[in-house]
Image (spheres, rainbow, N blue to C red):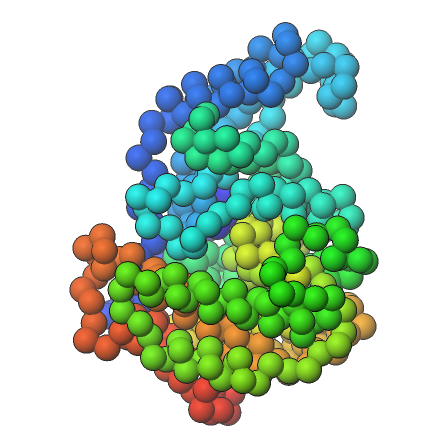
Length: 404
């Protein structure tokens, strides 16, 4: 989910118009004036005496994503001696901010928990240790009193985002760009992964991301992550249908975990270009850290490659040309090796893992749509997975032979 408006796109005609619009959560019903008063009152508890904060221009983005609620606002306060970086003490300065708020249980969230403190801490540490463009972190508020749920506040950054609805492959500022511009965006995006994975001693800096049963090697950390994925599926299916296809994937993955004694690295987890903001085809903000973990590098590479393939396959299904010259697996691998000095291993396995992760999310999203009356339950629960044919082909070992 991004905090900027993206360039408008034209939806293709025909029966496939709904492929990208899969049970996206309803927009917030919050009153922006009331939110402004709540944020202003909360800021008084966070700022120094005499700051006199004023909150204005509160907005709720139309595309609020499938995770945390997003609130955009401006806050003006009188600078103190400690925080007067841009102005002299006593000057008033306006800060362009974003609040990310944990979703309410009544909205049937996509994930069982949204540890806002952890997301905040990941961004804070990444910003401290690297030049990866993460928004500056202001405050983390674990108490639900102010806004009804835990939240954190970060810098608002202006940029454009490859759209999800409709997918950027259907027609967007990316399809209208030159091949050279797309290549610049692709390479600089892969470079973000290389920088994140290059953080030294990640288990010390991100000890709070380690999962029970994990260890210092890529394989040990991944086995814990895979077990966590199984737990997520059990949560998703606890009150509804089960997916034989997802269970087949989990069984296959658990039985064939690759040996990997390389050190675990920081994994962004949701490593896709739709979670980056760009200016001049270079990233200016790396967003959405809900799925951050420690594990093998290939977790992020597999997710980045698969997420583009997901949109490419939707484009083919809709009879559109897509972007066959963009984010190709071999190009992403080559750029990552150049940027990191590390050659990816076992990518078929980790792309299947990415497809499985996405399938479980889609299963939850569709269950949510059914619960809210936006869709009817299918006769076959596996039809709740939008990319079912892709997942089946990956399991059968036939998917990549059909990719040009």
